[in-house]
Length: 450
Ligand code: PFF
Image (tube, rainbow, N blue to C red; front, side):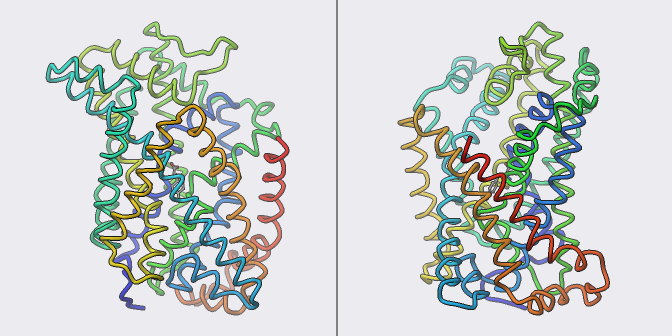
């Protein structure tokens, strides 16, 4: 269906954009360190199972609703509802999704701003600007706000250009650069002393740790965050897909790229940590666990880069550049959620909407920075731990219980006339109806009860 509201021009463009949304800080930073501290290859196995059995079906739910409605989440969920109550719940879920996407962007832009600051700092070091470089890597309000604003500016500039000229074009450019940078870094780090030890930690399975129940819950949380589920991002990207596309196939491609990059990032981050250990950098916490989260990225790795001389500065530029790109292709998908909603329902011009909403989110980020200790962690917890699974649950309910099964089949048939004969149609409809909601709910309750 040709539409005035924008559409991806090709399957490649869509896969790059959706994989760009999925591949972000969660993959390159979150996954490798979680795997390292939670049973190595065994965690990887659990993650793979969770990603394909729960995250992929939930991703399909969003893509199908979006492609069917060719509209934003609020309109789409109302459209497939049969009763007034369903329309109300669906519409509210869409609106909550757009608020959650904006809140995720508000903290994501702060972290991405740090990544850009570290990348710029290494570049300045290369050209002798030591004092500015030091300022860029030290935690301070001005540095944080400027980094965040720079990053938000780039995000807004891309979204203001629309689906093809903004999202698709930039994802097609940035994703290959991301992949090449990642591969080059992996190859280089592997040649360094100590790397093999890191590889062992990453690849030797410890099933006792990986099968602990809270770990499986963690793996689900990360898989949801990693595939950008439960905020309407994938729904809106699905709505820009044309009717000829085979949805289970493109969804599978996006999932595979997302997991592939996470796994590849493990081959960079873990070996790099043990190279750091070899160079005398502390990589364990006092209780013997591997350092993770912000200390890893902003302390351990920079110390490693410092200990490597000129090569280290170059690696640092590439590493933080990689992180910044990964963050940018994700952040544009977050901003697209509220922008698409306002453009479609209020008829405001896209450019104006992008700048306005981007500006509002930047204000929220500034408020978080002003109250960093109390707000930063809180916003992350509320959005990623509670809201994403809950809205993901609702999407599954709408596809599994609210939407008529024959309409669903018709939608899937568009890009794949023989879908009924395949495995996907035999398993997915009842899976998304029963298995996904039950498990998501169980996980949600578990995290609610602590
Ligand atoms: N998938 C992104 C990551 O792994 O970093 C995060 C993300 C993007 C979450 C888009 C939510 C979203 F809507």
